[in-house]
Length: 326
Image (cartoon, rainbow, N blue to C red):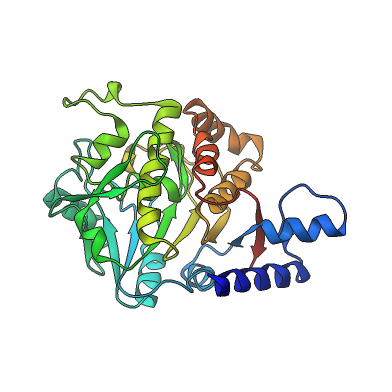
């Protein structure tokens, strides 16, 4: 732990000397230094390409070892906004002993059974490497430390065969979450379909989707589910948000996703979940009004910003960050 703190302090101090943009409120040289020491690092590149993704990953991968699961939302068939395959393939090939990981959906669609899910994966071009549907052989319960809604969460059984996780996320709007970033990617994406996702959504036994949990209670459930996965991997989990093709709809909407109005912004990455999510929201909220309007309405009408405040309450990272452009 001491070495990790020392490395972080060194990098933060060095970044300050190189002109890092620090986000926070402080006055005076002494306060500025203290505030800088308290910030988490978030790396940023405008280069949304395989090369850009590999470069930014190299800044956060120090603790990624062993068997690595790359958590990707593979999307409904033919979804227009999913991440470019060449980017994902380049990253997977760069990470030794890795493969893509997913879980089946709770909603009845093209990914609710393993057989249908594998066909969707094929259609969307993710079969350049093994894709582990982690709940194919069932689920296991893992603890939620400090949760007020859950003491444990059900996740795909195969998740426990991985030593590390790289959370590679298409950041965009979401029909229920308001927005879907790295937190949602592991909160819903690691929970198994029949049990874990049902817990998070507080879903009834029937298919009455209108009865699924909404608003702040749903956001809090997602956060606690994400904390279970965070707790399992410890320091061996990192987060990458790709701010590209940001429709108000998730990739689970497939070809029905609303048209994209916001321009592409870049890639953000961190070892700190809250920091990378806060930086992503901050960047989106600086979009021109015409591009921001629909996204902001979707986020705020679903109480999506509760994701950030509850992650802070749950001690899942730091909302004060230094943005390091590479």
